Image (cartoon, rainbow, N blue to C red):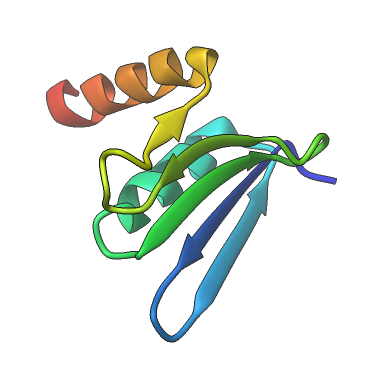
Length: 80
C-alpha cells in the first residue's frame, strides 16, 4: 500500500499514480492539474481525499495540512 495516490480524470482516460514519495506525488499533481478535468490526491491508507481540483474554484478543496504542503511545493517550483 502506498502513502499517496494521485488520480486524474480526462475525457477519455483515468490515470492513477501510487507512490510513497511525496515529491513524486506533488510533481505528478502539478503536471496534471492544468490538463485534466479532475485531479485528486488521496491518502493511500485511509482513502481520504486530501486535495480535489476540477476546474471550478467553488468545487476545489484541500484539507488544512495540505494547503501548506501545496503552497510550499508551488513556491519551490516557481522560485527554485
